[in-house]
Length: 80
Image 1 (cartoon, rainbow, N blue to C red):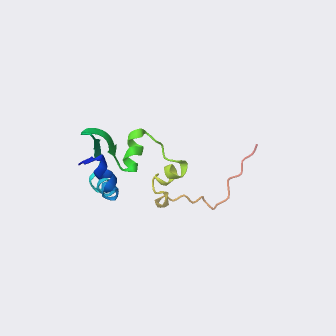
Image 2: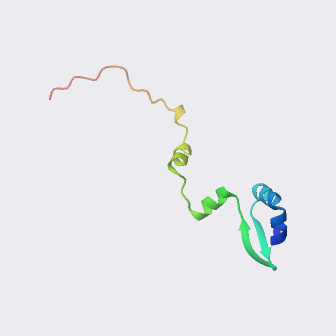
Image 3: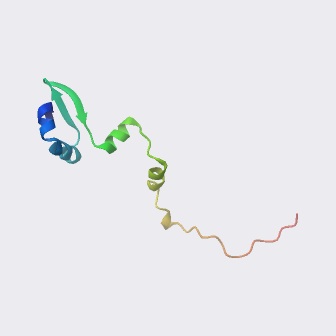
């Protein structure tokens, strides 16, 4: 959808809601497209912005399904 700048300012909450529900929204000034409002996640993806380290770790696979316990038996004897 396209929004005139004045309308976008007056109905900003609706502009944000529609962006999140319907996708990018175009804002025009004097009939010319000047900006596109996109969800933050889409902006990060398009701009190549890397997530912070915590987000990176949390986005990884679920490791709880893996058996990561160490064996309980004693190590073997080795002569050096």
